[in-house]
Structures are given as C-alpha cells and as structure tokens.
Length: 590
Image 1 (tube, one colour):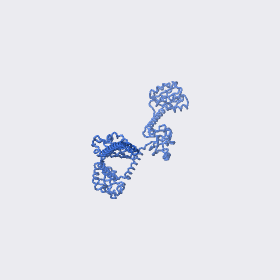
Image 2: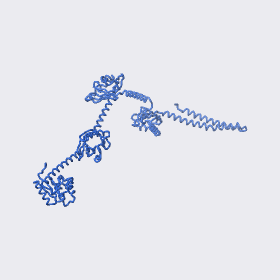
Image 3: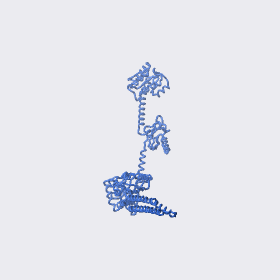
Image 4: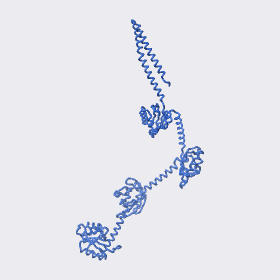
C-alpha cells in the first residue's frame, strides 16, 4: 500500500463492551501506535465527531440502543465523519443493505463473525487510502467546476450524440441570456442559424470523437445573432460521452472588420469616384497621384496629368498667391487656398478651391494632399449676387421710400437711410427688434396692422398693401402706404418680410381737404334744392293764378307779392354764388 500511517486515530461506535474489547485487541495488533476512542450510542458518537478530533477511521456497529433505523444511522455518521473513512462492523449478514451502505458513503462492510486481524487491517488501510483519493477527486472536481463556472470564457458541456446541454458556465449564461435551467432544456442545434445547419452537422458527425474548431453564428435568447470561434474537445461527463466547448465571441471583431471594409470602400468611392479632384504633390508642384476625377474637372485624364506640373495649369494672376499658401505647409499641417483659376484641356479657365494637407512624413502618402473642387458656377452666381446687391443698394439709396427687411425667425429688422430721412430717427435711436417698429404704429391703427400681418403669415404667401400712421422722431405722425412681400421656405414657413414705406401724408391731406370741400358743396346743393324752392314756388303759384282767373280785382297786390318773392330769390342766389366762390378760392392746387 502507498499510504501506511505511523499512528492510527480510530473511533469505535459499539454498545457491546465485549465486541469493543475484541476490536481493541485487533487494532493493537495492527498498529503499535493507535489511539482508540469509544462511543456506545449515536449521541456520544456525534459529540466526539463534532469535537473536531483528528480521526483516520470510524468503525460503526449498526446495533445502537438509541437508533432504530439503520439507514438513518449510517447517513448521520457519514455526514458527521466529514473526511474520515467509515467502516461498518455488524453481525447482520444482509448483503442488500451492505451494498446500499456503500452507496451512502460507507468505505467497507464487514461481518463480526468473519472478522480477522488481517481482514480488519486491510479494510482500514484501504479505506483510508480510498477516502483520501475520493477527497482528492472531490477537490479536483470542485476546482474544475470553479474554473468552469468562474471562467470569463463562455463554455458548455454537450452530450456527444444528442447535442443536449449538460452544463453551462456563468459566462455562457451571460452571453446568451438563457438561464441555466433553460439551457438544460435545449440542444445546441436550437442556437444554430438555419443556413449553417448542413455545414455544422457535417463537421460534428465527422469529428464526433475528436477535436475540432470552426467559426459559427448563434442566436441569443433575444434573437440577436452573434459570431463565434469555437473549440470543442471530447470528454466523459458523469459517465456520459460528452464534449466541452469553448466559445470566443468575435462579433465585435467582425463588425469592426466590416466597418473597416466599408470605410475602405467609402474612401475608394470618395477618392476614385467623387467629383472632387484629389492630388498628391510635392512643394514644386510635381504630381505623384491624381484621382480619376481630373478628367471631369479639368478634362485631362489622370495618367496625362501626372506628367504635368500644377503651376503650369494656374492662371498667371493667381500663381503667386497659390505658391505662398503652399509654402505655409512647411510650418503648418493644413491650409486652405482661396479660389483660383486653372486651365482645362479646352483652354477654358475654371475656378477651383483647394484644401492642402501636409502628409510628407506619412510613409503611405509622402506628399501634400490636395482636395480641390470646381466652384466656377458658385463664383459666377456669387458675382451675379454681388451685382444684384449693388443694384439693390443703388435703388435703396435713390428712392425716397423707407425700405424694410424683417427677419421673421430671428426678429431682426433692418432699414435703409429712409428711416432717418423720412422720420428723423438717428442710427442710435433705431432698434432692430420688431417690437420697436410695432411701438411706432399709431394706437388706432396697431390692431388692424397686426391682424393683416398675421393673416399673411397664416396664408404663407402673398403680399400686403396697407395704410397706417407711423410716429416720427419729433412725436408727430405721418401717413404711410406700406407695400410688403412675404418670403417663405419650401414648406411655407415665413422667413422674411421685405417692404417699402411710402410717405403719403401730403396726399392724405389733399384727400381730406377735398372731402371737406365736398361737404360744403353738399350744403350748397341742399340750399339750392330746398331754400330756393320756397320763393320760386310762390312766384309760380301767383303767375298760375293770374293766368287762370280773369276776375281778380287786386292784381297790383299780387304783383307786389311776386316782386317780394323774386327779391328773396335773388338774395338766395347771391348767397349761393358767394359760397361757391369761397369754396373755389379755398380749394388747394394739386
């Protein structure tokens, strides 16, 4: 035997004194140095076992006075014996129970009637060594399980034939999102993607009893697809043919590789297919790379342009400023060259702008990288805009009207010089907020103006023409005819209101004068139609009486009445004439 202790520490659990003495004699024969303790019942045995005394073996008699159930007795002693071997010494020749005790953790089962010193000696030493091996095995399994469960690498154990999960570690649970119980109800094939099943089955079947490794994709509980590198080895697990599989999640790496590939493709598309012209050159203007877009921008194929010099293509009026900007790259990383002209293959001058980056120290580039784009259309449009603004400025200066430009989004109002000339406001008195303008509208006109403006905003388009009074710097009011146009974005959202404020105070005063004179003329007309009619009616009545009645005696009296009425009518006509002359004299000349 590989292990023979120099001294034995043995607990004998025996209620029969005679049997104990016999066992004690045998033990003294087996080993010269032996420490023997006795317990005559289960309670005494528990007390001794709980005292943490170092024991090599426990010899157990199954007939104890305080225990009726032998199975419970064996279970209790095995539990309290901890790492100590337990041997049953009994007078019961019950083979079935003897086998059962071995499954309960008993090291050996001996009959007292057949017991010999040699038999007892072998049983004790074999049991001690067997127990030691069991403890080492348990420790080894414990370490394995600890390593398996605590490993940061996801692992699982599969049945080699059915591919059912037998065990999974915490890392695998965390990776897939399944609980341990859910895993044990699945097969690994439940995680496969359908498109990969034939290839996987072929690999597994051809390497059922050997090692294999490959890349695979699995579905997590959430449905998310992950990409893995697996290594799988055959093992025996709890008496079953199994295999342990290590998983390396390469999802991040594959995504990173895809991003890199996409980035390279985008870069290629930007450089090779983009409309911008990309060039690599040195400080002397010699090219080492020209993108294919040179033919689009310059009309010159890239291979031909490589043989040219940049400075030979630049307009003579622009070449100095380009060279100066290129030389700046000796002290700075990047510089933007203002727009300049280059000659195309058709001898046409095109405007381009360039951003230069110094990558001479980068071995993959070894030059100045120039990103250029054709801005000819932009330059032409810019010039048209400048010309248009100049014309606008001339018109704004030439007109006596006040031009307004209101930024609706930013509540910013701008005026031309008319605000000063027409209303007397100095620049320091003028505020650019819309509320400043609103405050100058006459209180009686303010609500009407706001309502009209709000209606234009609501419609999202159109123009507005409205009259109102606007306060001058001296506190007086002028009559204004405001013509305003609303500018909107593509969705109809108001952006600007451009307007012209025309001073119509003089016109308004003329209109008021005309209206006043019209009222006086109405009075004259009323007089003509009513006051003149009374004496005229009397005259006409007397004349009619004289014509129809020849028997009138006192005709002289009637003629007197006619004369009085005629005199009264003459006075009225003179009064009307004087009033008409006064209206005519007071009517202003336009």
